[in-house]
Image (cartoon, rainbow, N blue to C red):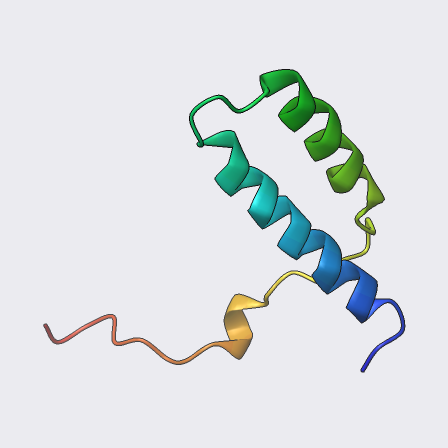
Length: 63
């Protein structure tokens, strides 16, 4: 596993949990804003994004 991948994955999971919490009745919007901003800021800026060229070939003609 890459260096820091475990931390990255844990942070993404916490962001997901926070998104679920934000939609619960009685959720504290200030908490969601503060914690969400802090978690997002802790993500590395050099996170690789998926390269569309690495994906499957989709038919574009002949439908």
